[in-house]
Amino acid sequence: MHDHDDHHHHDHDNHYSDMQARVKALETLLTQKGLIDPAAIDVIVETYESKVGPRNGAQVVAKAWSDPKFADWLKRDATAAIASLGFTGRQGEHMRAVFNTSQTHNLVVCTLCSCYPWSVLGLPPVWYKAPAYRSRAVIDPRGVLAEFGLTLPEGKNIRVWDSTAELRYLVIPERPAGTEGMSEAALADLVSRDAMIGTAIAKAPEVSI
Ligand code: FE
Image 1: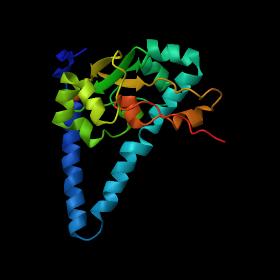
Image 2: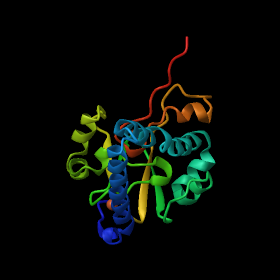
Image 3: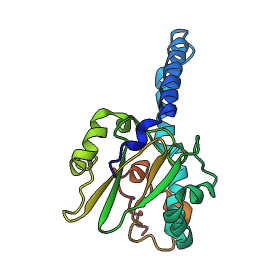
Image 4: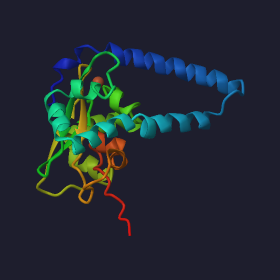
């Protein structure tokens, strides 16, 4: 589970850092020239982190909840099942879907850097890349979840999955009660980015009167 052997090959993260540095330089230049407002950029990045990017993953989860055959496929070969919806990795990295159950909650981290399932979640949030999350998610997952406002029942196990360049994890949250008969689109709206990292659970449906 906390297997770091696969962390020997990390070119993509170096490229990403390199790209981040170039983007930052470009942003600084454009700001200095008065061409852009940094606050506007923050809004765009935030949108991709929390809204646009994770919609792919939410579709995967909603389909898994709605279609047992797809859920089976996702368990056996997440890379292929996810690719069937048109979401593929940038460098062919493999995906594994980890399903929350009544006994077990799954939490994803990359202890060494910031490996993240880009194809289904978009850009990683800042906290995912922070050393505090990366170390504490392994040492004290229950404490970390509490800080995210998620308190799990005492008896529930937490499994922590350490991502690598070759293997990325997607948490499939438990389907909330009271969602019978909901469309996949409506179900997807209950699935947040954090629920697919494991720092949250799926939202309960709004009760209509
Ligand atoms: Fe990594």
